Image 1 (tube, rainbow, N blue to C red):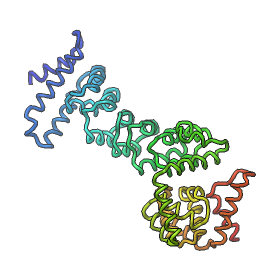
Image 2 (spheres, rainbow, N blue to C red; image 1 turned 45 degrees about the horizontal axis):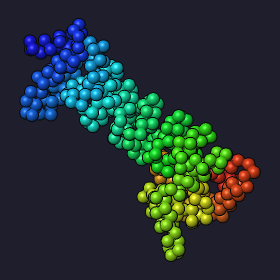
Image 3 (cartoon, helix red, strand yellow; image 1 turned 180 degrees about the horizontal axis):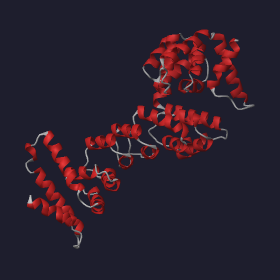
Length: 380
């Protein structure tokens, strides 16, 4: 124990020249003391040593911990136990350097920290050069806007489809977040379409500007820009091309029917769903895409009815995760009542009216979600 306390004193001593190197050396020697013979330790014993080591680091003066943390953050050979002790320090100034840069931390360390620590720690993790899907999911779930923004604009962060859906929902009232998500090169086409549909003209144009392949799509009116961007994205999508070719073959063979829409919707296959539904409803594919992605259930019901689909297929469309509707049982019951009351000819008239207004361009077109009100008026 005499050696142990002597090493603690050495860590605290800042009076000598080159103190930082001596302090790091002393800390590493403390680590060696704890881990001598670690190959014989159980998992519980190792966890116990980790807790003890955090306590040891905790007694070191804050300004010294901060200084040491910056050195450890870039030391590829730093002992993992030592780095973990700094990473879980309550002081963000101590934890942030190692959380954002150290390669000594394991995936398990980062997941545990992401699930238990505060916003300052999360923000530091969000700035790592690479972040796994499991970690980004925790950061997006638990993070405040500053953390979520950092994840969204980090090109090294891997984001799952589910997490992208969360980002799209949160970007609805956050123009800066919408911009960060829209400018990512790994965002799926249906997520990007939802962002462009709800974002301001300024955000839409900045997203286009950040993507050279879409630059020629800008023409002026926001709706036109969105449709042109949509066309560019669709034409460049390998998944859409495969879905379109499959649907075209089924149509040519006179085999295309409601079962194609139902199966694609149940499989959460956005591209195949909109391609089949567009053919069956005889309406532009961009109209179908807007309807499928719209949170309002009325829009997709109108397209489904125009395609002569049954309630089972309409329900499958409503439950597609791409729109993130989260409908309750009561919502579905109400949707079924509206769907069964709506006539096919009325749904087709609404789509024809909507498309005519889009083509004429005499006045701004209403969102397709507003078609539900038009359908009810027509029924009445």
